[in-house]
Length: 124
Image (cartoon, rainbow, N blue to C red; front, side):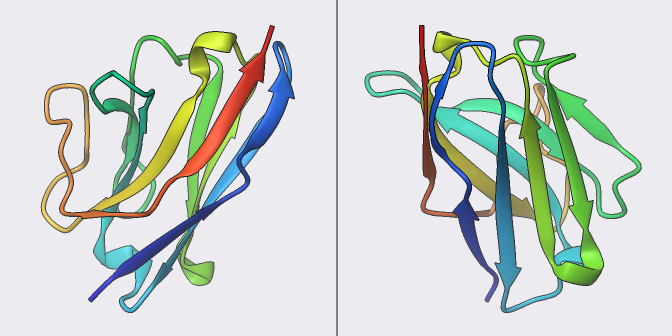
């Protein structure tokens, strides 16, 4: 069974950057399409970005296009989310997600397996 562990969250000022990591264990990362979602208290979980098995396909939510970049290193079983030009509205718990069948996207904001999440707080 695959397990996902996120790291890299924290507190940053608006305009700053953070890099989240998602370590994949139990199965090889290349067996999964991956994605990042986020959830603010009182709101529904929101799709952020998805990436295909080899990294050649990516999907971004409009709210993060041009500011966030997803990448993956299958040799290291790790997926990354580089977040630049952060805004206070990016504040949320960020979840790494894995799916064996489809790449998470705006039209398919689902995944089979989830990590525990990492808090990102952007101060104004």
